[in-house]
Image (tube, rainbow, N blue to C red; front, side, top):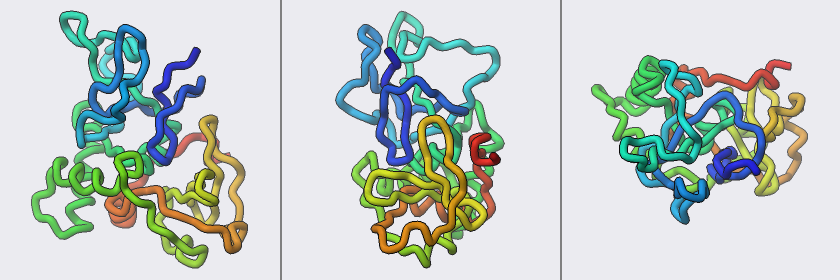
Length: 216
């Protein structure tokens, strides 16, 4: 049975077979004896995105990965960086240092902060994350065209779409559907999933990694 460690663009955590391109964490939120999630969905304000392979380190998902047989951070998985960003995560300074420095640097440019720091990013993001109680802002079809590539929106409250090159692609745990015109949404209620802080970073030149299905 799949472990409950797969994150959707809303920030919710599911048990599905697919894993995706990236892992990451929100601290220790599992019981290693049962390999199930605790009631809490985060232990830290730093929600990060990690690479799945780093320095030949091997971890047992939801296992005892700390010295003394203690639970280590809970491994979560994302289809791609676009998904992880929508869920409110940001790149890790340990396994993706240059990537993380770029993200925080562009955050500083976006908000005119001379010496930006990761905790500043995390504090802002935590207020905006849907899985932490943030409210998704409504957005109109006309406004979609002004959003940066890599932004994600929801339609009808449960379907997620990624925006790229003026089109929208429906998200799933296995990949993206074919691109479709933004006019497909008509008068359907839409909401932003990607946090406002991350949208500002995308607007200032950060280019997220996409799942190969987005290139099809």
